[in-house]
Each structure stands twice: as structure tokens, then as C-alpha cells.
Length: 452
Image 1 (cartoon, rainbow, N blue to C red):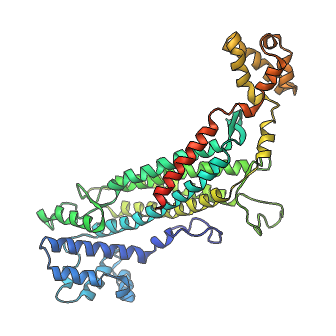
Image 2 (image 1 turned 60 degrees about the horizontal axis):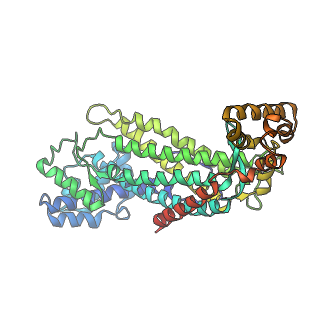
Image 3 (image 1 turned 180 degrees about the vertical axis):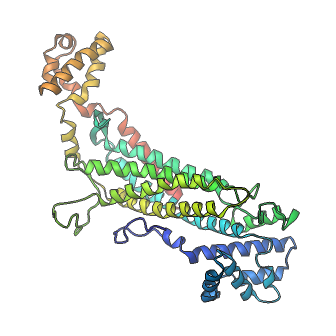
């Protein structure tokens, strides 16, 4: 599994790597063995005393790691040495009831979903922190005019807070998607070797449901080891989240460019941007986000490929899904931690925003002039007049306002004062401030829910 981002980063590790350490996964598998034993004891399949003996023993710290490692080296099997060691510690007369009627993937897949649920909890808290910071940023920039850009060119004026409202809107939907997917994703599986319940018969479904109750999970309708759509859905949801975060990171990266200079991610004192160019203040956090997001999205095709399991089970696709999930989760934690850092410390430069807004000498207000003039002479005639002035201003480097003031098609209906007023970009930001403040309120509400 990739480390994803440099360990020397100043941003704290959110804890996802620790979740995917082998020892944590082993403990999750042991927790499923306990749930299995207790569910079977409830139905009288194994003695209640055996279930409690298994539960008492099933802690990794109770086990002989050397025995487990030797067993892994000898058998090459993912789970069997752990089951052997659990049975040894439980001892007679109950050790023989360990792993009764289950197959490896029943335990490992269900246990890995326990790990994934922990990861989801961290992700949702991280998003809550991001939304909380975004709320303040949206309010701070609600009425801060900035050039709205489409196709990389000035379009119409907007406000910085409106940009943040867009980010908030997407992130809130991602939290909704995680919640909506949870009942499909977090389900126990106990169908046995081929998912047929052959080892437990009619007791199979109630045992599987009992495992689910023990773990706070649902229960698979058909416990096939070939089913992977719910696991792929999780990776695809992480991919969607990554796309949003990458968009935010790329936007800030662009607005940090020297030619823009409108924002700057946090650059703590002492940060070195280059070994040879002392002036560099590089967008390191944004670059980390964009790189991690690309890795996450790269796992989506792998997860979809892992759904193509042959017959009733295939270790090949299980390995693929494990890789997709673990790498995507580690990278998601890294990505969100950096986005939170940026949102908490983003520096805004409203003076530079306004300077850039005026770069076109009023050209960014062409739509406003056209609509006002169009009310008198019709939209198409107004478009023609404003288009001519705008193109001449751009190509010949002339003043847009002076060209409008020299065109009788315009001056017949608009005075010099009216033209000047229409060229004020701060008067044409639409409902940006309203959407920014509404977004801030939604972000605070969502953050409160996620962080409590």
C-alpha cells in the first residue's frame, strides 16, 4: 500500500494508515469471529460457554505473534494461522468451536468493513471540520468582488464567497451519499464456501443476521462471495469526493499563481519552497490534494474491475478490491486533512481581486450594458453594438467605455453617467452574497451534525 504523500508534511496524519495496519485488520477479523460465536450461541448451535471463551480470548495482545507469523509463512493463507492461534488460546473444550461453519472471506470481508466504518467516521469528521471553516470563509468573502471566469476568461463579476458556496454545496451532498450508502455497504456475510449456506443450512440466515446485530451491521440478502458492487460503490464515492477536492485544490492553486495573486494557502514561517529560489511560496497543500485525489480516482476503475469475479469466488478480484479500498482510504484521509488546513488558513487578497477585476477596463460588464441597452432596442441589436465596442477595445487596446460613449446606437439611449454606472463590476454580482451566506448557514448546520 502506498504511503501516498510525504511523511514530512506539517499536516497531521488523520489516522487512516493506522486503521489499515495488518494488526488492526487482524483485530477486526477477531471481532467478527466473536460476533459469529455469539450469534451461533444464541441459536444453540455452539455452547454459550464456548462463545464467551472465544470472546475472552479474541484479543490480539493475547496471542503469540511468532506462531501466527510462522503459520503465515508456512501456509500462505490469510486467516488460518490466526484462527489456529485463537483456537489454541481458547483451549479445550471450547477451542474447536472457533470459526464454525464460516469461510475466510466471510470473516475478512466483514472485518474489513468494520475497519472501513472507522475510516468513514474519520472522513465525516474531517468534512465537518472543512465545512465549519468554509462557513467562515463564505461569510468573509460574501461581498468580496472577484472576476468570474469561464473557459479561463473573464465572464461576469462574482464574489469569492460564492465560490465557497459552490464547494459547500458539493461537500454536503457527498456526506449525504456516504450516509445513503451505509446500509448497502455495512453488511455481514456468512454464506460459507460458495455463499450457499451449506455449512449451516436454515440456521445460516439467522446467524448472519445475528453477526450483523452484534456489529451494528445489516445482513446480505444473498451472501455470495462474488458480490462486490457495494464495495465498488464505496470506492466510487471516494472518487466523487476526490474530484470535488481536486477542483478546490486546483482553483486555489490557480488563484495563487503570481499573475493572479488573489489567494494564498497557509505558508507557515520557515517554509522552504525551493532549494535554489528563495522567493518561492509554493502551493504545497494544493499540490498534495491534487495528487492524492488523482490516486483515489485511479482506484475507481480497479474497484469496478474487481466486480468481475468468476463463478462463486475468486481471490484475484478480492485482492484487487482490497488494494482499491485501502489505497483510496489512506489517500482520502491525506487529502481531507490538507483541505481542512487550507480552509482554516486561506489568505484572501481583495485588493488584488479588484485589480484583476478591472484588467479589462470594464469589458467584464459587457453583459450588463447589453441587457440595459437591450431593454430599449432589443437584445440582438444591443448585442451587436456592445460586441463591436468590446472587440475593438480588445483588439485595438482602446477604452471600452469611450467606445460605447462614441456609438450613437448606445448614446441614443444611455447617458455617459449611465454607461459609467453600468461599468461598475461591484454592482453586478447577482445573488452571490445571498448564496454565500446561505451556504455558510448550511455548512454550519452540517458541521454541527457531523462533529457531535
